[in-house]
Length: 188
Image (cartoon, rainbow, N blue to C red; front, side, top):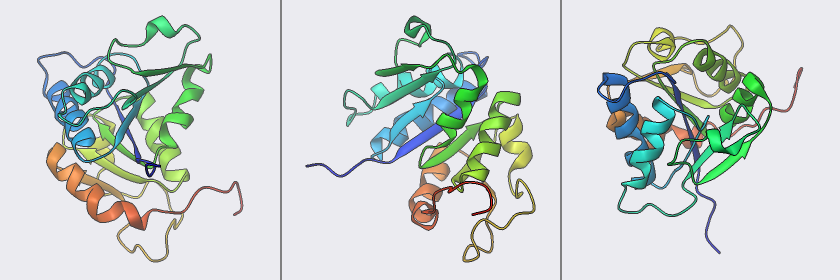
């Protein structure tokens, strides 16, 4: 039996255009994630989500099921064509909590939806990396999302900044094992 492959949430600008820096960054990240043994989980729609899923399929080690889209709507046809597993939730923005519950989260720019995914990931004690592209990811890079200490043993816990997708994967390789706690509810 195969060991479970970690889930990497790639979150960011749903409106990113194909010729943009943000699209290219998400595309690089999707392929490298699968190259390094991660499954890609996202909101399943356009922009960063589509770029990451499409490039995940281009990885030489891609396998069916490597891209998972958690849609905010109940209609699976809304998923971008590169999503292998579609979860149509009817949860609207509440689906952001499900996306953020991956093993780690990498933000590629993004607006309010990405901000909520980062906040959920922080509360869920996940490793968070932000690529150096415009948006909430970069704005929060180098910061703690709030005052609460998530890990006493990680003195530099923060939203980690990565210049590019390769550096994001390197941060994951070094730090993911440190972020093993799971959120157990309020007050725990």
